[in-house]
Every structure is written in C-alpha cells, then in structure tokens.
Image (cartoon, rainbow, N blue to C red; front, side, top):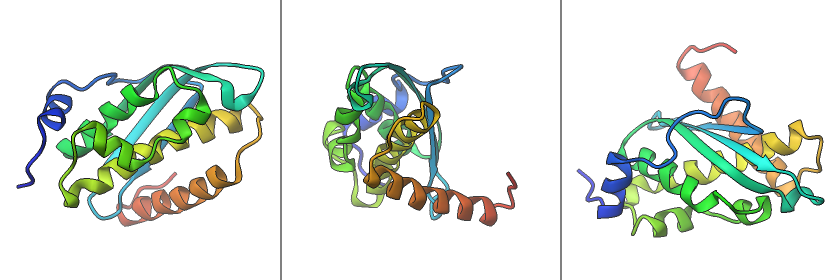
Length: 159
C-alpha cells in the first residue's frame, strides 16, 4: 500500500470543491486507461479583454478513483481558483504533487490526470467561447481525446 502524506489523506477525507457546476463555462473529462481513474472538472470563468486573462471564479470536480485521484482533484481546484487561464494552464503535475507534499511514484499519474483535467476544462471554455486556442493546448486535447476514446472502447461505452 502506498504511503501517503498527511495532505493527501486530508484532501481524500475532506475534498475541497467537490461537486458539479451547472451551466459550467468549461468542462474537462480525463481518464487513465491503466488504472481506470476518471476525473471531471468544471470551471466558471469571468471574462476579460484577453481570453487568457479571464479568471477562474469557481471550480469543482467529480472523480471516480483511488485516494490519490481524489486528493489531486481536490488540490488542483485550490491551485486554480482565482487564477487567470494563463496562470492555470501553467500548473503542471509536479506542482500538484508538491502541493500535496508528494505522492508515491506509482500514484504520480494521478497528478498528471488532475493537470490534464484542468487544461481540458480551459480548452472547452475557449472552444465554446470561440476564442483562440493555444497550439500546445490543442495538441494536449487531441492526445487526451484519443485516451478517452480508448477507455470507452475498452469498457464497451458508446458516445
């Protein structure tokens, strides 16, 4: 059994910002083919003159997965709330793991899922708003869409 930090245990037992945002401005859903963890992140955004200067005013998550998946989902909401889209896009999995005082190596993929879910929610917001999507975000989205397609195929889920 992996050894978790006190922060991981705290976020697992008392997750921050758990739930769904009705009429979210952006939604990001990601999953891991190997472990079966699935995360869905919802964001509300206050528009600004520049798309990347828009601010995440509210953020919530729903996650099906292990303790590390729940903890990383919880902490990414804390890290992103109140940030501009540019600042939120800069949050990487290492930032997520560090904010939780580390993760066991076998659970580091959960921090990547959390960062990817946030980026997918930002992508969805930009796409819905018909705002320019940075090339790196577009590439990331295509990779994640292929992963989700594989998960659905592996589990016999249709769109």
